[in-house]
Amino acid sequence: QQQVKQSPQSLIVQKGGISIINCAYENTAFDYFPWYQQFPGKGPALLIAIRPDVSEKKEGRFTISFNKSAKQFSLHIMDSQPGDSATYFCAADNAGGTSYGKLTFGQGTILTVHP
Amino acid sequence: DAGVTQSPTHLIKTRGQQVTLRCSPISGHKSVSWYQQVLGQGPQFIFQYYEKEERGRGNFPDRFSARQFPNYSSELNVNALLLGDSALYLCASSFRDSYYEQYFGPGTRLTVT
Image 1 (cartoon, rainbow over the protein chains, first blue to last red):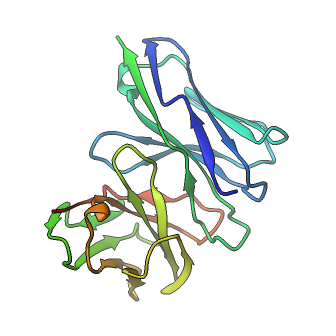
Image 2 (cartoon, rainbow over the protein chains, first blue to last red):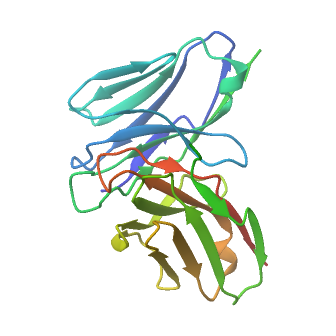
């Protein structure tokens, strides 16, 4: 019930291409969906987040698309750059419920952008 | 402004020992959460503290405990260490306990031998 499933496990994209990572959730009580970027040996860094009252949010080259009925959300990285090579995690939270800011993370996607 | 800081950076312990990890949140943040990240997996929630009270606990054994101090810094304690406790322990802070972004520190890499 609390799982967040992320795909693909790994992704290779050419420089300038579009990277797409997908996540699906089961718990309809989730109401906050952030994406994190993590480089080796570092903590996750918040990239962008969305709430279910909107279907899309864009910040620079990063866009979240959200489909409430399908219980799916995705991260699109436009004009992917070698510096984007990292592990990306989707997450979900029931911020308005009893879990009090407990993030449930997906399994992660290792993105490699070739020059 | 300084981000979330954690100490120590790395730690090597022997099975059965006890360990204390420390976290200082971003200035002004009153909520601290702890996560365990095993290599190759996503972080798993351990605890959340807000205003020095435990507000959430993940599916971890009682060997794991934590506390938050009046200055909002926090400690995570793990007793009777097992090999499976080897992981990156992450601390995250946020302005409130819900509806606000969580910002992570660099983590403490714990190796249990």
